[in-house]
Amino acid sequence: MSHKDRRQRELARLERSPADGSVARVVEDPITIGLDKTVHVNVAKLPAPSNVYDADFAWIEHRPGAVSLFFGKRSRDEKDQLRTRLELRYPPENLVAHFWGNSREFHESIKRFSAAWPTDAERDRVKPETMKASRDHSDWANFDTMAHAGTEASIDFYQMPPSGIARFARGQGADALNFVAVARVQLSVFELIRLLDATADVVKAIEQYLPRREQAVERVEGRV
Image 1 (spheres, rainbow, N blue to C red):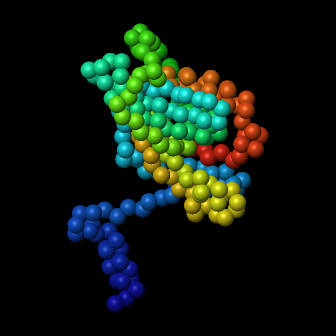
Image 2: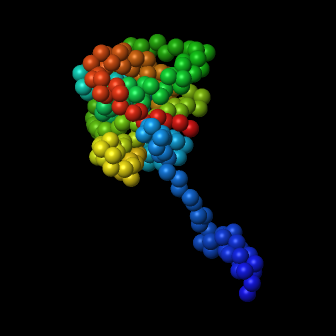
Image 3: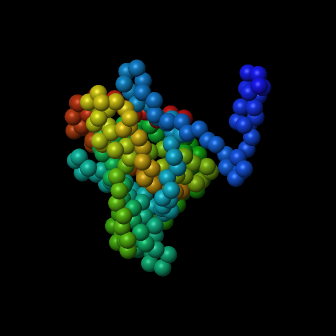
């Protein structure tokens, strides 16, 4: 068999669909390292979280050195109670650099979108942070992506393990830099705007005490 014939047979095997109907996929790493050691993330290549939480409310709580993003599902029968509450603890330095820093254009875009809609006066009177919850769950996150389609919005939360970040910072390579999908929170675009608006004051407070070494750390930058 000539070299040309062998090559044609190899191409035929590559183009033929598997008998079981499965399709081969090439999974690309969403992380690239710049020459200046900045970590860049192609958010389009991040895995979608399998855990999905439907939130009626969203709010942020902060004390020096600690930040929590809360999401709640209201009880249909007991309007002053939550069926469930999800807490995502977020490192203050990551909140400033990622949750806030990477969402500036998106925040302004959804505010312009919402301007054409009527305001919800009842929501202004509700204080979900004071409600009791029948069930609670807490987790950590240090990276996120946001999206909206019309009035439906979502936040995908991820955790890059501190051990991988520490190894990279010590010059031990980037092999341990990987993202673990934590949860997808689905909520209205109006509630997401409330959350981001409230985050502005928290960011200002954090920036007052954030140590210089944390301000100088190379950011993990998300991009599509």
